[in-house]
Image (cartoon, rainbow over all chains, first blue to last red; front, side, top):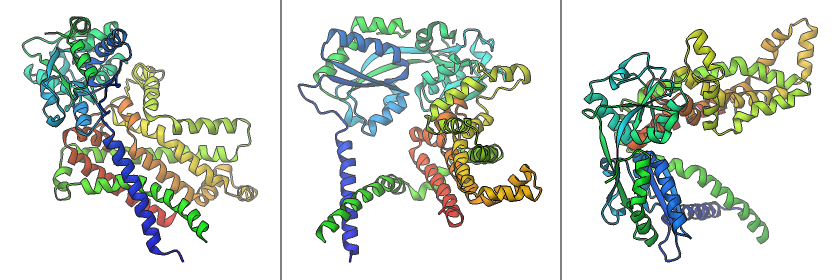
Length: 256
Length: 260
């Protein structure tokens, strides 16, 4: 007869196996440090998509044998991912306050300022909502899209709107700034509050409407290292070089 | 004897791994929940509107699936036309399509600049994205194939002689469908409805892409869970537990009667 004990034993064995598999993948999350490794995993704010993609290509071209792996999301998502143990060597966030909830144990060295960015309104090129100023966003016929309140672009947009005394007619809060911009590029939204850099990167696909300096927000982008790995240090230094700063400026960022 | 035992272990161990794969995450959700704080977390201002919207949109989805999906299932089950196989394959596409792709497709069709949406806006002044109607569109798009295929399966199993008998007694095809076919495949309809409803309740990708994310208007429970995970993880867990509970209760209730 097949005993209950053997069933339970098999169950426990299976569970142990399953748990050990889970444990392995969690422990093996961060790539091991070693002299042969030339991969740098970078998690960054989505507003950096175009700039970092170009800079990573520059770096790989001038540093043979290196591989820069990029992943973009809202800074709040990047921080959540890192805190949950996502493998990453370097992170770049939109705004210093985004780094607040970051697990301090994972930070190596001091953070450096990569660039800074300001807000801007984006509309479709034809400007169907006739948006010419931040005060226009309160019109009830308008479809305005913002970033979700947890993302830095959402927080900054809410601050700018309240500073301007504008209650915008919002139809959606998107996951990150590129998703927000996409709704305008697709022509589904009449306006979105994004970064100046997003308007510059999107070039002719959107039209920018300036937000007055008196209510605009400036975000400083910290570059935070999570490892001492030499390739990572090298890439972090490269990010602060004149060549990389030019890439950032070309995409609408301000650089130190 | 020994080899039989080993062979059995060879089956039992992978089976237990499969159970662990399914159960461990759900157990973790239960273990990580701050049970005492759940009422407070559920009072989070986004939770109740999200649940209300989810129930409203999924029940609308279910009604639409039943109204248009049942006739389609019947058509697929009884048609002998060569094109039927192709039609069935077409119905299956949204089933295997990544939901976010479905969302993009819906935008291209019913968005303000979309193939149908542009005309809708010009003629009727309707703009579908960013409205609860868009949420229902997304949910119907992903849930309808589940409903149609489940109901068609049940109808395939129905002996065609019943239709023939009803016809010889003078019943019109519509009356046959309504009074003979539908009542006889009721269990199939119920399981199709449960599958479609569960799929609609869990809908995320197509919804966030096509309908956007606005509390009370287009932010369904799964979207609220995703957003809350960054701002208030315990609220996300509490809302997840509510969804788990609803799903288990509905499936449990159906299982007793129809699903076997």
